[in-house]
Image (cartoon, rainbow, N blue to C red; front, side, top):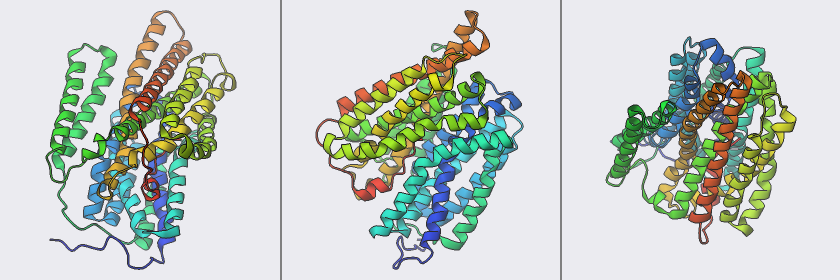
Length: 487
């Protein structure tokens, strides 16, 4: 048996506030990298001559690897050492970013983004675990998690704004190369201010569970991508069926292994399972609509990358302004009301966006819809954490917390593959009818926004039917340890 280090320091570490700064920086990097590339994609597509399907995979490769490996990353960090995992994750993330920033083909860029996701899946849970053991209890813990959660909540907005600045005043490649700075600061900061820790106990890994869930999700996403050529094509059916079979095998494995990657008791609870489904739907909507919104603003409306990035912040600011209202309503109205009404409000905003035109304006056709979507999402992201973690035992808290974020990432990559298929079909039909390029693209974006509205209505139905009866509140510690980032 290897030497085990204590999971908690016996006295407050005098370097803990510096450690907080380093760990918060890490969370910023992981979150903003999910959106910073969105602003750069139109230019990257032109320079690297990417097809629309390849363009989608630049985003999908990152969120798929990140979401599918997040549970395993948390296990590795706990058993192998959190500081060690953090530093390896940061070093690998920086190296993958350099590769992506210097990519000369679409294949290279997609591979680099996937590798970023792999190391982000190690980096993110390691950072959260380090924060947990550095601030084990008391008022300081609340302050630390408030800082960490604020960074997580604003990271996507920072990514859109920073992506606009870098793309407009430097080059799209700097949206990836900028991570070199973050990686160097993170590594030096970890060496100076972060202490090592890891957990005691059984350190067996669920390798077969990891393989089946990762390959199953990849096959499923790829099958949806192939659906643009036809849902009845043999390749499409084969990959979709293969993905479902692998995911079924994953469930079978998790029910039998001693140390499952995902203890099934977490998702057997009806309300908790509903919360995870709703989180996946929000991930699909947010990642899909943000990407295609950037295309409409830049390619059709002609906004600069900086202006497009700033224009998208209307949704973020609406969410931030509404979140305190949702938090006050939660104890009196309950999660079911908020999580049913929120998606319906957001769906109304997405329907607003379906009326965009090729010669329209941002203020008349886009701004109001983004504000309504942001308000609706705020009523979901506040209670969804509470429902997902309510009643979870201490021994399952880490897995449940990771699953909240995994659901969003996995929902995002599956949703994006479906939305891309819908987009390509709409563009093709519009072009065949004689529409010009701008009008055809706008038809495609409008079709995606309609699909996201339908997704939100389905989420509202899930909330209304699965979140029945009173739910115990999640503990403040459980809620603090799930930095869900939407916008």
